[in-house]
Image 1 (cartoon, one colour):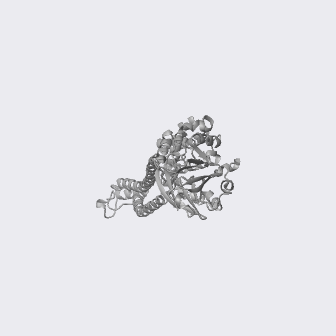
Image 2 (cartoon, rainbow, N blue to C red):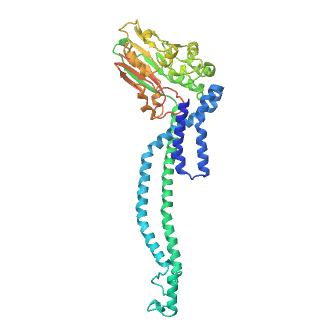
Image 3 (cartoon, rainbow, N blue to C red):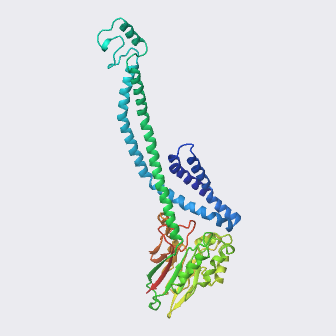
Length: 462
């Protein structure tokens, strides 16, 4: 928790340095409002986590919407702001060069004017162009009063016709010229900063809005044909409806589950496979939201394997396994069943998620796949794609997984390969085919960008 809070603080400070500080005046009302707003938002996400643990799901439902929505907006503000770093730096560099070149030209005029002003205002100086007192017409030798005037000029203030007005004009002009570049430089930098902040803000809000519409809309139906060399030709055409990462939780309602069930039933699949991360809470909190699963329809039944989020609930996955059994969804706990179709047989196996390992409830492929007929094809349900590496050693023909959400929000999809071998879609790892579904729900923010929700229809072919 401390590490997460530290990261959140650093991110908010970065946003303040880029979006608030250079776009507002020190001490101004906008700066104070935006600064304190960011300070309060720092504690919004930890408040959701701590509050849900103390007060339960009822509190989380209240705080989850603003907390998760700010998380998404904050993420894309960072993405757009970082993307604008180079253009922003280039714009500032060009502005600085333009100011320097303009300043070099402007500085010559103030120096000449200052010299003129100095000539006019220096003791004993005479400015040409105006008649000297006591010198008729401004020419010829000075005599009498003229001599005393000349002496006054050399020892006192300038007594040249029009010289006082000229000195004042020169001084005010020089002052305006010297102040001008500073004002324009400040305005130009503020303009660049505000332009970048506007682009980042509008881009983030538009992206999150689009992502919300995608995440909360109907899942996409992906129809994927998969050829299995060992599949009996009589089983060709066997169909699996695959769904993952439904994530029933504080931001979802019963309608979310009802829509998924309705869409799966419309596929008329032979087998329904739910490959983990069904819930983000206990049966007491989310049982009514899962109830529509009792209406799933398929020829050979519906099956479930645990995901990592089933192990995050306060009571663990066992209560959900029992609840799903009562709804007609069978959990495959490091075990397998035979799917008999058109006179041929296929093994359907399922293993627990890796997050069950610390509690002694992790995956056991040997238990799930050991002792079977070697010539019979096998389809494995495993929540995390990374489990395919071990599954390949057991001769698994096809692994069905979820977990990645397809990245959920671009550019998170670029980070997924650091942990998982496949982000989304059909691939092959160590000779075993694997299909990774993007999931039908969302975790955290109800936002999906570049990875729409998905229900998959896998059709096996010989």
